[in-house]
Length: 468
Image: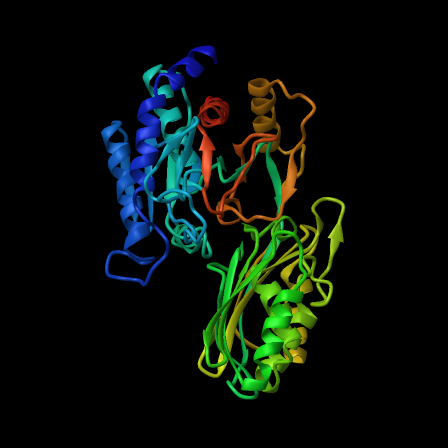
């Protein structure tokens, strides 16, 4: 594989340029339009992937303006697939640079999607170019695929599979971490609402926090109006507020009893709420200290009672555990007032030995008890593949040979990837052991040296899966 590693290294500058080109396209999901089922941003990023693949000389294809691919090999042979996505979560606040510029600084490439998942899938594409250029013999056809809806439900790949398109005999998605993900927790994304009528001596005029159900919110804001005799209480409560070190509360006094409250937290991926500080949850806790009454007070109380700053679903009734993937996690991702109601999202992720039938009915009962209305509930079953299965063995062999880390073993994660949507696929890379990751956060970046290491591992994995 040394020759392949050198060939991939020789593509470094072109690969970085291609990633920057795609990162420059803001591809957050938007309203469906003709020819763009998940919005113009994801469609433009997909089209750009096709253009890059064609420039590299690959055969390309597109399914229903939502999935695209680049192929290498005999069309009649079995297919190995490497899946990625070009849609991204919203950029959010707190960036020190333009999230769509592709800035390079101190050997790192910055931008939304650099690591999740535009950079990794383009690494796979360029690794395949190196394989082709070296004329390494492959018996199976290789397809590098991109979808446009992974962050909000994987509907594009699900539709590809449902429609009877060709499926791979093996493959991976570089949308998690090494050494290998052989288990992915099940997930429920619940969109909910509750009464929030503006009334009483302390009134919440607006509340807005979070950008996505699967991201721990780092900023939340509330504008309040209080009666004259409550003004001093606001000032006192702000000065008395005590939360975790990264929960920072500030207040803007706009006069005549009107205040804008801003809570800063610490962002994290929705599968790891325990490493973040949830700005929405902490602002709700603070508002309760003001003594908000009526519907707003009741809803604040129920939110703090059943969710609050818990991250394992204890009060929701879904704190489950197994030895393979450990505890349930719960991300309270968004909250926004709309007239006399407030909408919010919860994303529990449960261990791989349970099913949505173990979780969804319990959630529905708790939501009803809390007085919340269920607007939608998207369910995803867990994924698990045994350590002695052929795909796990092959990918782990590649990883150990390329990294020298013979003692590492496959693992389970809380995140969900395309491996759940496409048969015979597991998540493999791109994050190396011990490598910092800030996907779904401000200043998302990827160390370029680590990126090249990951591209070489992907190249070796493609050969291992497609050579026989």
